[in-house]
Length: 202
Image (cartoon, rainbow, N blue to C red):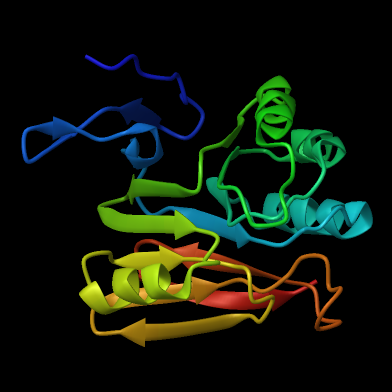
């Protein structure tokens, strides 16, 4: 059996699952949580803006978030220590502007309860099937959304905050924490019990 990680603070376990007789690869490892009625913080495109990262972390802590998802584009490894102040675990993926992936992985590994997983993560959160990716490949993103296989699809990349639905699938782009492109730094919150999300301007 694939070794599990101890995410006791959030109730998340990490294990390898089978699909059509084959193991998922590293980017398809499923994060599962037994925590009910979760409030999930969602952020993306922090782009080295340390003051805005601090504001996002502060707001997540104020909201008593159970888990934070980061949809990529941290950019530099020196931003990772800013997530130490989070009162919960952070799970993220790489974006197209993230340079040295291995250095970012190592930097995230030093920060307790912070983990960057490849370019795609599938999560099970309070019974919801969640996809997390940066969204740089339009065809892939559209396929994930239009398939309606996932209850929630989280992505970033465009820097434009948006929450939509496609059938049963809730689609969340939290916008940009950095505020560099739009001038409006934003994050999102997902309520797993209500299956609803809302945007928050920082």
